[in-house]
Amino acid sequence: MVLLSSMTSLLLVFFFLYGVSPVISDGSDHRYKVGDDVPLYANKVGPFHNPSETYRYFDLPFCSSAPVKEKKEALGEVLNGDRLVSAPYKLEFLGEKNSEVACRKRLSREDVAKFRDVIAKDYYFQMYYDDLPIWGFLGKVVKEGKTDPSEYKYYLFNHLQFEIFYNKDRVIEIIVRTDQNFLVDLTEDKEVQVDFTYTVRWKETEIPFEKRMEKYSLASSMPHHLEIHWFSIINSCVTVLLLTGFLATILMRVLKNDFVKYAHDEEAVDDQEETGWKLIHGDVFRFPKHKSLLAAALGSGTQLFTLAVFIFMLALVGVFYPYNRGALFTALVVIYALTSGIAGYTAASFYCQLEGTNWVRNVILTGSLFCGPLLLTFSFLNTVAIAYQATAALPFGTIVVIFLIWALVTSPLLILGGIAGKNRKSEFQAPCRTTKYPREIPPMRWYRRTLPQMAMAGFLPFSAIYIELYYIFASVWGHRIYTIYSILSIVFLILVIVTAFITVALTYFQLAAEDHEWWWRSLLCGGSTGLFIYAYCLYYYYARSDMSGFMQTSFFFGYMACICYGFFLMLGTIGFRASLLFVRHIYRSIKCE
Image (tube, rainbow, N blue to C red; front, side, top):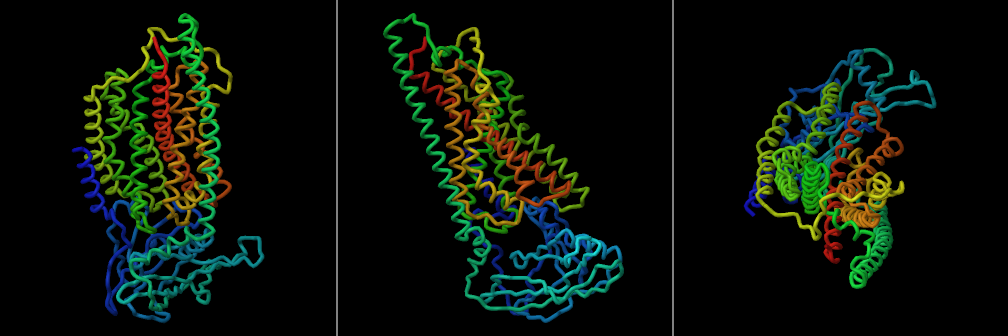
């Protein structure tokens, strides 16, 4: 209880330190007077189809009439790739402007070539006005039916139209449009004089300040989108209910017949040879090989499951409203750090139950099992981002902050959890005594081996979530907004239930075939859904997205490998725990010598 209360206090402290409120919020609560400067920040630019490949706004040869000032950003904003700086446009509260010149610049031939290149790649810009996001394209390519790229015409948009809605003394909504009548021809490779101009119009609205972010949520809550989501849920539920019901009926009937048969055998002939899963009662609880690695996987999986539950709780109470910059990344870093004690406790206690002696090495293995591959992946991808000079490259200061969180929070809690788990001194609860020598496992058909069993185990849970996966991918690796967290929570619950059930069923069939090495098999079968998700990544990248380039490709497959690996550990832990409960239950129900 002391550890839990301290973790809760630390969680609140970290949320307030890094700008993520644990209650529902809708951005800044600024009130303005006529003529007050309302902050407008230019964030980043990048190819529309490559969401990870973003650059600072002034990496392109834009101009500014005043010195550029950088906005101080929270941890999550930096992790999200946000780099906010003062924009060249001045939008005072209720101050209307008509074709105002923001700044002038003479573009050199190199500048023209740079703008022409980014326009060809469909670059967009993103800004924030009073914490409200706005975006638009930098220019357009006119092909006019021509197929030779050298004959295309390239135009830069140099005029922006801002339409701002207000309610009394607060900004409610902002819309930016590019004016097709104001174009700068960049087709020829020569110097060009450009005036960047803008128009500002203010309109009154009745929308209250508290509801100004609902506009961005409505995109994912449109009736046709909701119908698809609910169809996905109903389809998943029906499929899962039919298949799990079918398996449950078979499993219960088979188990019932087994119990009756074994009870009859005990009453009839005591020396009659045992068969099926009762035959291996002396081996089924024999501790597995590589028990330290197994315990570490269970510890990491339990921590990741706890992390997922906390994230869903925060999402359901409204913390991750649209464009709450970096809130999700901050929550992931902080909650992962604070739940490391759970990983240490779970791994060390289970390792000691399996009569392990080197618990210190086990705790170190637990701490590095997920963080190790994540660190290697991050190091490679951050190097790629630095080479591209992209905003995805973390500054040195941010890396130091993350290291301090790991050194001062994650590691101490992991060690404390490991010490608490070691001192638990509980024995492994085995209903049957284990024989001295292991029983030989009979030859198995190909479909009873590990890989085919993993394929069968992962297909059913994946089939329950694959429709929702598209919307999640389109949000994480695209520009679609996802806010239907209630539906996502239901899908996650279905995923957990199906994973547990299918793993239990396969564990029973494995034991019935007199194969007592179920420990690792249950974890691998439970986690195999992560492999299916990664296979879906290949399909999504090549068939459903327009991502391209080395940086975007490496970021997509690199970070998705880490996410799928996390799902593997989490769902593998769920499958193993369900199988362990099941095995203990069936062997308690029979008389074991």
